[in-house]
Image (tube, rainbow, N blue to C red; front, side, top):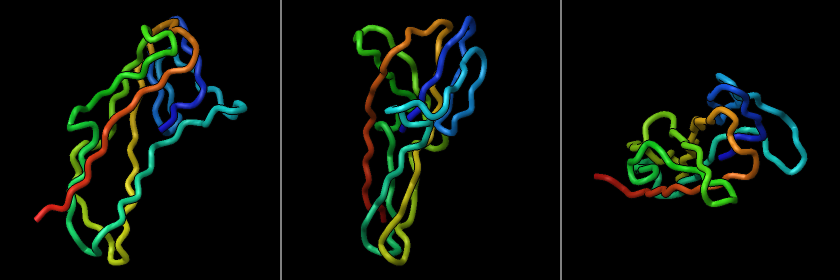
Length: 125
């Protein structure tokens, strides 16, 4: 998942994994060594036509991204359902995307932010 390069202004705002900005956020495209905004992609390989449950971030709808200063943060809100009951396709594969929106404070500290979230996958009856 990437939110790409962006700048914050005098007002708070958001930026999403599809590159849509709001408020005081300005998206900057095609910067060297920085991916443009994009969702995470997950491939689930398993028994064809089987039902399974995908749980994002232990069912918690938000996660924090932390600046390299280990103090400053931004909040990621996952888009869509974070608990998904799905079916593996007839060839044994299911591809899912995970989208989100990042809340950016006014005059957010520039720099690199990172974070993590968990994914769990289990067959269901």
